[in-house]
Image 1 (spheres, rainbow, N blue to C red):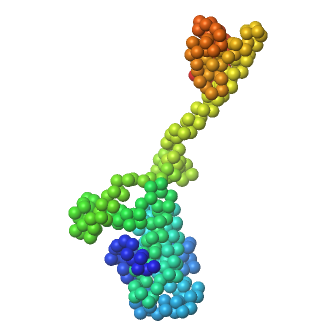
Image 2: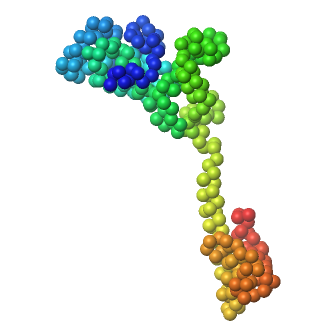
Image 3: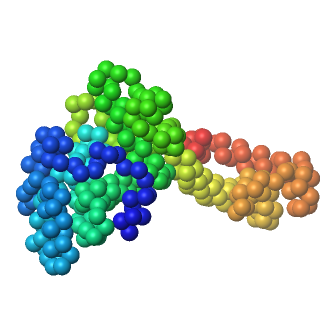
Length: 319
């Protein structure tokens, strides 16, 4: 299992055997401020000999006490990875710290001390895998973990260059200065070209707005399906209204002996026959047994009825 994970993708050499000095002060600040660490007292990482001894003890006697002891010595490693992918988002930081700790716990349980690897190397993979899977879990477009790692590594390099007043790294610089392979550069560039954002991200009217006043971006994007549904409801209401007016027209203005014929002509002419289809005057006349001109007169009679002032006021909202 460990060998498969090691060969899955190439990890930065800086991730191997991370020591206490490798972490900046901001890691300690996160540990001090985060509620999840209140019961965890961060300790220095083990030396190689100490690490071997503690995992031999844990393998022989996997107690919660030894597990927590190991966790305390590598909690900074988990925070280190969580901080790399937060982009200054405090809410995301909370989630990533928890995911990183879960990855660390998995690494403690599955680490095989007999293989000869340093635990920090194996734990780095487990934590990184957990963090990256969390970052893409809600994404519509799924990218392989290796692609995500190459992309985030390139973005981290560009942020550092920007802070030093330099331009983003070119493909040649990524290859020569930062030891990217051709496949990693290609994967990072392809991932960069696909800018995936969340419709649930919030947008504020101004910088002074509170979070409660923020609106999700999704609210600003028209939904064609929703519009079609609204039009369908509106058309259905109009159809029921016209059907009611047709019944009133036949009862008030057409002799009872002619009502059935008039009703067939009008329903077919104005699409009130159930399926919404509108037939030509010629087809209606042939089927009903009247001339085309007579079918037109019947249609015009109902149209004039709809144009009466009291009916126009009712229909004005459906124009």
